Image 1 (cartoon, one colour):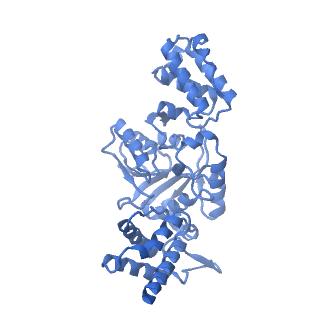
Image 2: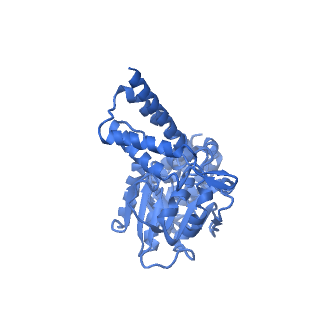
Image 3: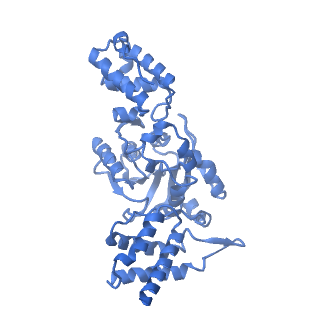
Length: 417
């Protein structure tokens, strides 16, 4: 569908353009959910931005007449919204969250989490009143949650992390916009992996939680958002499972964790039926946000740890990067007894028999590389191929077993030669 350009001659007032835009949006069957939830509000947001009007004063100008240049700008905004199915926030590069304006582009999700309501209430009554609470915003994206936390809790120290460097560039713009460089730190990190040591009084996250099946059915508007910020494995819980498992050791006693899982909530309950999730309610709408205390996370780690989350591996492009990956693998193997790979047999948790020899094999490989006794060349391509082919797709323990097997076969070939 395209738009009739005669509107440039016949539509005169701001009210005319908002009404006409809302009608055309409904006619085109657009989806709303990226900052607004209806055609009128979407058209209104585009018009007031095009006219450089203050968000809370534009209603005073509804009957004002637009100049020819202003009409053209509004028309072009509407045209992009209809023809490209581009959410309004990506056209204006502005989104509102917790009453604050944020810069956004297509490297980050459009802020829309109901967690905004919790932030405005300073997370009361759940967050203890502390002199200087430490807050971690995992998967910070645009930085809206981290910045809003620092704004509404001026005594707080806030860290925001994201795996995407492009998203962190956007977050940095928003941190700087509000002059929070001294109170909000940003880290490129795969969840907790690259964060500095330390514990937090509050871990809050709106992580990717869309299942693969749901991704295939999303409206066109979602195609402009980074898939990295939406999809999280077959059931949408890959990252949430890791947050539950790894976050237990990152909370202070008495601390709390708040995570949004949206429509993945039923699958989360099915996976962890014994975990006492507190599902928060919102006056302005929204669902699928749970709260757990540090003590609850620790108490239920045996149930949480039975899940085997997929390890997100950076795809190594050099021998040095692969050495770093194996080093991380050693640390992960050391943690197997604490998390991830327990199996249940007659309701008694036991460690799989292959864990210890596998751990020793990986450590041996790392030691060889660290001592310079193992050299990368053509014969080492199978290692790289495994990382490239399987690194982001299969459970960590399976990947290690395959690497172990490939390493063993490689040594046998060398001996035969």
